[in-house]
Image: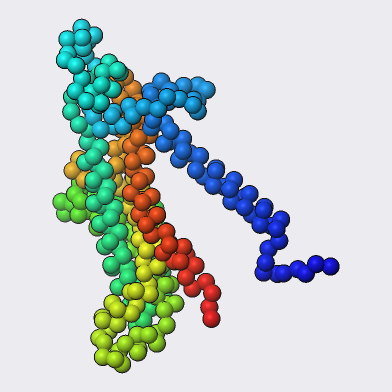
Length: 313
């Protein structure tokens, strides 16, 4: 009779688990692959039926995303000088001419400023609050923590009108500062709860030793606690950025021009003669890159942060 281990899975279990993980990864990545492939299709290929899996790639969608175009009369198109550059050449193939740049780059920059700005502010305030809840005797601590968490449970539509009226009175509508403060207010509850769990796992003896050596409380926090909580901070930053980066409802309600982010702008991309699906897919593809790069850079911290404190000694 072969020995059976409670902790070591069998070869069949490993094979089944690997198959399930591979299947899940394929199902999860398939829509992403389809969006990226659509961004390299022509307009007719993007709406063809049955859908085209094999096609001749083109950057037409990206050209349409970053430019505004018009369709002149055929006689006027024949009198124009030769196209100057690849973008002009692609536009001429579609029977259009470029009249200027689109506003996608501006909207994308707004997303970067608001998304990363609110994430940084959420992490700073959340870390300080989580440290206070973890290390000090705060009156009504459990009630305060529940109140903070309850703000995360509240549906955005429930406070949309009050926030709109408040922002209009304060002059924060369609401003970067207003959106950063709003996303920070939403994200800080998640940051406090996640970071408090990480800081609770850091032994108090480390700080006590630092205090005995002459460190102030803030110096002990900065030099002892923060380095050990780096994994939790990185994990929390990723979750906060994902929310701020993808948020749509408040961005539609509170922005229209100066501070409008990419999510409300991408669905409004209209091509000459109808919805330009390759341009929409190109915008969605580029919109994925910052969060993807940010997550890849912090992937080691993310993995350690998820498992931090899972095993107690």
